[in-house]
Image (tube, helix red, strand yellow):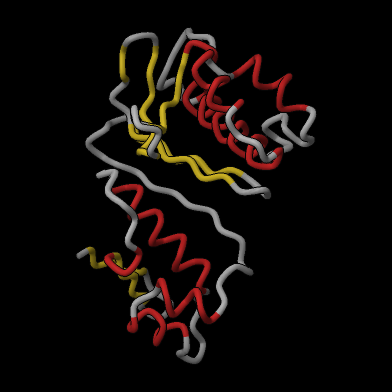
Length: 190
């Protein structure tokens, strides 16, 4: 949760940021106008760095020496990359943050890409579903006893997109999630 990252309040952001964020990350943080966005973004960075340091994927380094880059030179969002000084580390990282919490996925190899996503349950009305889910996905949501909510299917779509790591625009209809009763989901990517 945001509290576990030391960011239980908006006023805590500046204090925690100084201990955990690099100079480049502090600049990016300053660009966010929304206090909630600043807090959740900082919590994502803190949680990611704690994960990297506690897992020993990065050793004997101060957190402020690590920079998680998630924007290209033009300012567009890209899959997170981890820099340590001038070196880009060969790890795969995915960060998702909401006002409720943070989720981190990390792989010790950039050849095994990871993707994670968190979404609130209540953001998926009929119009949203029609616009962003395929016909087959919408039909699966109407099946009796369906155990996967629209939020779960959306999080799966976002996670697949992030794991692909191609930095193309997100077109949700190109990723189709197919739940199979109580079993696992499968995915088709066009």
